[in-house]
Image 1 (cartoon, rainbow over the protein chains, first blue to last red):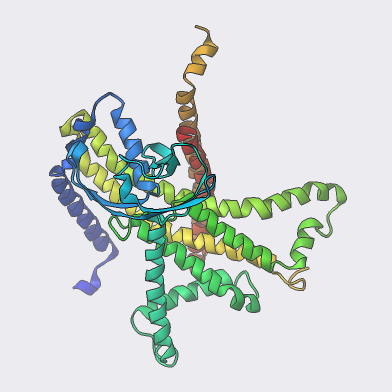
Image 2 (image 1 turned 90 degrees about the horizontal axis):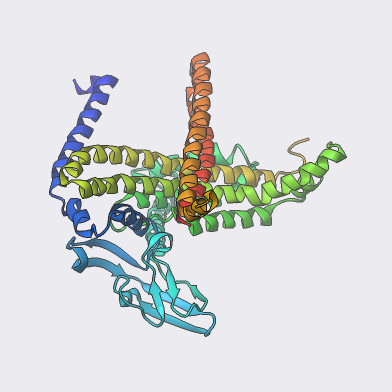
Length: 375
Length: 83
């Protein structure tokens, strides 16, 4: 009987399970103390809006300690977080400072002249009281998240490589996780690398493209897990995506061939008047806008996804601030919508990794194209 | 008070309003763009059902690129509200 489940019945079972999950979580959510903390904080009318902004940026921004959870008791809540080392170099005074971020006591204290900002867009960033310029290279939450993702990737791929070296998967059929990873690697090679690069260049650039694809995908996925070791939106940080795009830009510049620059600065078969217009546009587009678009696209997708999920969850507490009943009634709606957004974010995580890698392959293909490949 | 004084007083609120309206217009653009992509893809799938897999992959690629542009505008809106 099970093997003959038709598509409609399977869809119905999925919808029934989502309904059961939503009802369960709503019932559990009524006992959530957070639904009522909005009352304690309502000192003035716009408290809902300001608190939401601080909550969202507190979760999405980087910070110098990894906050796991707090017992919700208002102003003397106990916080459980992992303090991370702060490493700064004071440019004006020329001295280094290394200390644990537990000295900041969650924003209530300053240490060696540094404070951690708590409000708004700059939440989590360090600031100096005397305004001196400093260079912050601490291990922050995002750096630790990246290191965790890298450790996971190294474990996964090194264990698979060891299996391949001992013959399994090369001379005999692949087993277990080798199957999954092999199919993804084949996808990247055949759908992303081979359409854009010649055979020699595929061999040269495939390691980079594979690294890029898995790095972005695995970090996106880790950002979706709500608790430690996930939950730090690493790719939702603009500095990270700019760094990825910068690395791609450097690789493209270093491997670009003379034909690429000739085509860009002196397109063949184009009348002179149009050439005057076309060359600046080509230069700006190829060297500035395309890498920047890569960075911004990935950052915006991940940042927007996390912000939307957080906003929907925090809407419950805003409604509860008006009337506790309203919060409880809104809870199932919010949870249903959040589950939908999480599923969408799973899709977006994979798609954005694919898009970044695909565009990187296309731009690299343009840059390293041999002169006898076309015209 | 004159109109200009009143407008100057509300400049942060107006920046936030501008950012929100910009993000709304970007959502409009994204909806139109992805809708056209879906329309083209579905028509092609109806004409030639054998290549549905290829069409689906290319449709998702094009949709992600169009959504990228819409999200540039969303980021500008967020910056207008908070910075």
